[in-house]
Image (tube, rainbow, N blue to C red; front, top):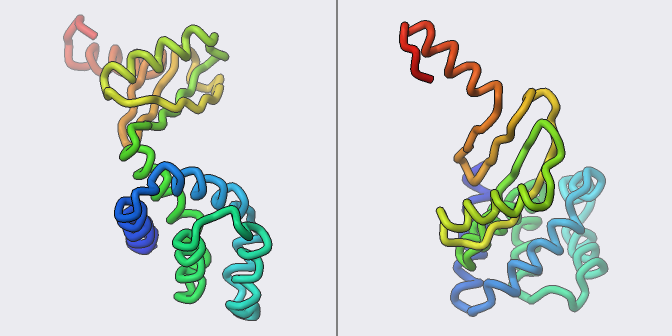
Length: 180
């Protein structure tokens, strides 16, 4: 299934680039994803007892003139191919790739305690300097990490938690080294 979402995302990226509508399509993809990202909607789209024309009518009712023809055709194609369950994952993949192409990177910060606005901005500035991209930060609090925080950017994790430091110290002590 990962190949399917990648294929649909890649095809939509190619269309966006060809038509020069990447930023507009990115906004529309976020709008579509948010509108369709519910269990009941996905169940409806996957239901073999619901005709494709009924599914298309749902898209027309929700989106009418709010999305481009090629975005609507991409949705139709996924439904026609029996891949309604892949619409949201494909849009997620498209959104991530399109954001990178327009110079925006998503980062998720998880900390033991709420961070101040200044701390979040400091993390954003550091990431912006390292990546040379605009950074969108989502933020969660997880008291189980004891102290500190970690940042996830794509498939990379920058770990500044107390737990990770304790693990490093433990491994260092096992090796007989006093450096951690």
